[in-house]
Length: 78
Image (cartoon, rainbow, N blue to C red; front, side, top):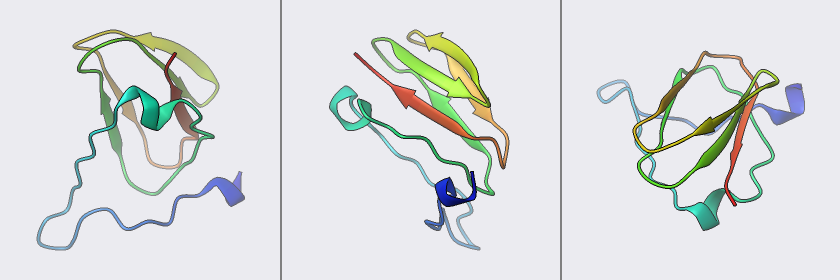
């Protein structure tokens, strides 16, 4: 579990959030991670498999997932 901690800084003191846009080919082999920040995953198009703390979900366009700090999560796409 501890080896999967993502230590990449997200945001700054003046701008305390980051936005990432990923396409299917970017997330096919996501191995999972956790971090101290809250994460919101929004499905813009297609289908996305999301696993949060061992629970698996299928996201469709318009779905959003909230990952609490410290929860192991990963996502994948076909």
